Image (cartoon, rainbow, N blue to C red; front, side, top):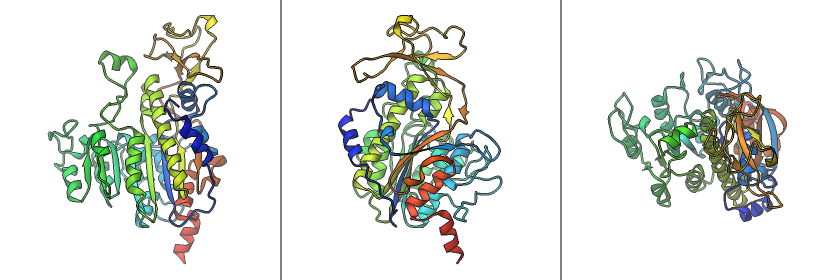
Length: 441
């Protein structure tokens, strides 16, 4: 982990105290590094912690492999994968909070996402996304639409019921077309100014890292809009270098900074909370074959995980759950002994290895020098490259990790619908079926 947190990691490891019986006021932090498969985590560990090191992700004690298939496809899309997480049932691949023409019927016997149920039960809720706020990994927990492209409709639905915290990019979806916002012009065709509506409804609205840090204590409802679209630039390295653009906007808060701000608000509710946090760059930058950007996304996701673990150390009734829903572009570590003269520090990489069609990325994309690992236990550093399998999200098994109430369900081989069940157990202290049967009596 590139974070200067070795001491924190040691403290975190000492505080991994299991809490088997979820309390009535249970809380959950669900962190979704979108598209992050084993290759992403392995590469992130090599670069930021070294071959013998650990990321915060590695310290979460409960672990399972989940099967990511959909009702009609072996591989998910982000919107269908998120729908399964939010409702606990399989849906068609092209689903955004829907199962065909209806909102999914959850195992609890209601057409409610787990976040909407938490709101009904008096818990505080929030979503955090490094992408724009219509991104499905978080938005599906609050919105159901017939087409993922209906970003302006999704923005309206995000604010229905007045969730406590909504932080991410996507300012353009909240402002009328032609109206200038803090980050660019609005794009809504219906003339609605959702920023003004949110302020009238009692929300504090912020637009930069500095404004987020200055949110006063006692704030109960917060919206942050930190970019016109995403807080990152999801293009290949060579595209960004030619235009002097960074992978991430320097004025936007990181996903960990947004998570911290959200938790300061949510933790004040004695009935508990549900926070869903998505690092979207791990998916989009992978699909753009931007290895350096993807690795930065993994560092940022791991920082959020470290913070969540530290939060749980003082609030043990909180579940920390981490899962993606797919394996975006399936990055692979390429490493050979330097004596072979192929992958050598400070020397530009070849476009491809001999006889291998895979595209290779170095620190600045193709034909640039390789990455250099953090030191191993002997202080040695190793050059490596990243190869890409495709431009798509793959249907490979997904690693789920967890700590806290409900984490005993995270073991062995499970289905993607189990994410909902783990969250339900942690938040409400029962199975969805038990809740359904109690309602039927």
